[in-house]
Length: 74
Image (cartoon, rainbow, N blue to C red; front, top):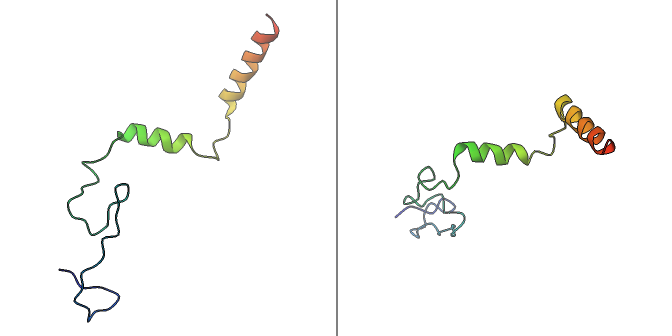
């Protein structure tokens, strides 16, 4: 039984603060490495694709111009 850090004299155990989505930091039965649903490559892709600072680069602009020219020539 761990002591309550807010009141060192308390004999009460710490409250379980976790839930199904966010396990308690005191829960020793949950291993985040083994429970990972996505691969590292997928996680990196999701983090980078959600970056609001992701601006089009020169290649993106070139591809967009080529697509517009193809559409105009149809």
